[in-house]
Length: 378
Image 1: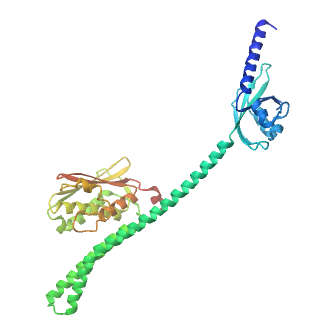
Image 2: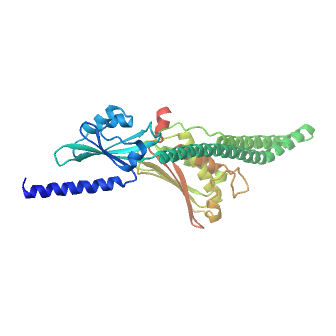
């Protein structure tokens, strides 16, 4: 043996002895097996836990299947990668995380280095954490369900209160008219006036009930392909017919000249535009400009409704989509809430911006293809 070779072997032996010292003092269990699956080294911690298994087959000593040993030795080259397995010992009753790495010997043979870490407490904590998490999820689900019930009850109370308030006036007018007719003392012209009043209040009552039903029981939109330009034209034409509302207001619409068909519920989206436009016309109070504009961008359909009225105050702009909110003396305060609900059912949104004494703009947008699930099942 040459001097260089001897020095090399001495260095390897020194390193091996140093590693053994390190392994002996580790708090984790360490053992080394040879190519025949026999244990050729165990550190003190492992011997303390399992007893001395030197010279014994790894799987026999630890109560594992021989398949485990074959996987460790035959399924791993000298360069790795390391393998990891978890098992519960029948000897100690503890659960271990075992890391197995290839070990190259000076004589050219290959061994396997095994490092065992007791993870019993960790597993217990993980199980406790999982149980706690599941219990917490169950509690959150129960609380969420309770809150939903409370919200439904609160909404029911709000609707009931609002409905009672809104129908009280027309019902009172109806009762008064009926009493007048029952007396039979009116002239023919007076009777016609009373009947006209009864008809008007009955229609008014019907409209209010329809609004409440639309808010309380919204239906899913029936999405079909169509052109928004046609929708704007219909909306503007219908608005102009109500001369008592529009009076001197100039109503214009600007459709998208390069518009492509998109998916929407024509009747419901028309209701959205009418609700917002009527709200704007009421703010204009018979004078001003109302402009409807449409365009398409980023896979969405956009409609803007702008008026040059007094604007919406900062204290009200955050409230206008809430049910029953109104700054006017008449109306249920449900129009914008219903409009928002319809647009959200289309997968869209409504935003509003307002500059006092200059202009107010409502922006409605939704995906050009609508909600995929609605199209598939529509």
